[in-house]
Length: 431
Image 1 (cartoon, rainbow, N blue to C red):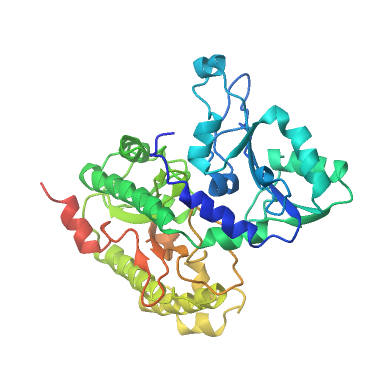
Image 2: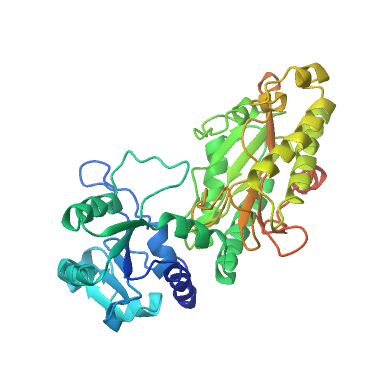
């Protein structure tokens, strides 16, 4: 791992938050992700399952965490099972966690090798009445690929049909959505790395560069600052490409007079940042481009002010829609007749602003959280309104990462990244 070791007090506290929400005499199991194959002997780079990472800090494949707070055996109240390391593994793959190193990372005293799991788990299940299994219940999850968790759940239901089965997801969604101070520090670092990338681009972009060259500049800056790279597939969309919400080809030349929409963010220690900025290829917005830009910026500022404790996300998004409706009227993109004749389920403004304004952010770019409960201090949201005008070859989206505060406006983790149109023009034209 490229990142500095994280204080294990974070994981000790995270586990405490989970076990205090468990039913009596139950245990919970969390599996690492698989290393996914491509073909032949090639694999995808390993990405740890965010839940076991959140609860233990163990960033290694073939790992299992078991929490059993009511176990009569004190040693079995928190247990890690790890792939046994060896000199041979160290030579071919690099060092894996030893039992002592695992304790230092996770703060868990009981560590067994993975081959011991079947026997010890059977002992634990004989004592427990129920089990929490870790299903993926993110609203946007794709469940076509069977994961290590999926295989484990199948086997548990066959081997232990009399045990009560509970879901860990509602607990995880609740506790992961409110960030600890250490987590916010890691997210701030990811945002500072993203800032370094943006400032590099302000000196690099000019007519004739290619979208993939811009992506390469960002990748260099991210990696040199101890990030693994992009927190998600980067969008570098110039001209009309910006009107494709998930444009990831990044293979077009940037032309004089176009605006580039950059939806990019560095990760740090598996925590994501998520930024969108729009930059004029030649360093100067046209009057129309600046009008659209500033309209989006006004919506963004109005939306930020509504991200306060107690707000409901559904109502928040409706109110942002009203702000956008007003701006689109001012730009002449819709008129009062469009509003009078609109479908309530798809308002007129949706023609030019068809996505949501905010989502949870954390270990995942679209992080877990409970959408039907009031937001609270310590949650982190993106704020990303946009206006997309295919007929003009123009798409503008602006996005920052915001920490909800106990009172007042949220804290902007990206407050130092240039945002105002005039500031961007000044920086792009400095010699």
